Length: 135
Image (tube, rainbow, N blue to C red; front, top):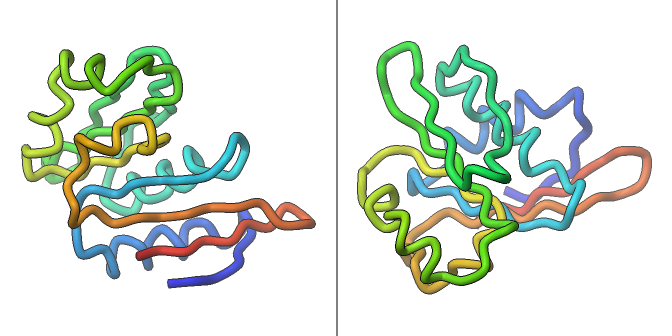
């Protein structure tokens, strides 16, 4: 997947990500304001999350449940100081759980990430458009 989209298209992009993902671990790369959290909210909604979703910037991980009872973990490693910090709160157990895991700022914990994780790169274009590349 490689496309440009606007906020009006984010739900369709989220649906396509869910359909194309070969792993339940999604790594979101992109600078501040690239739309990582907005896209994750749309993906969670597409998977059946009715609760309010937000970036876990200070808690490091949020847990959401879908209507069917499936668990989704949403990580934000922006403020993490080291991979050891992620390891100490059990990040590997979350990643090995078989549940959906959405990870913002994965470059902070690269040695903890599975090799088969789905990589999503976001960048900002002009006129409030975003480009997404999914591997």
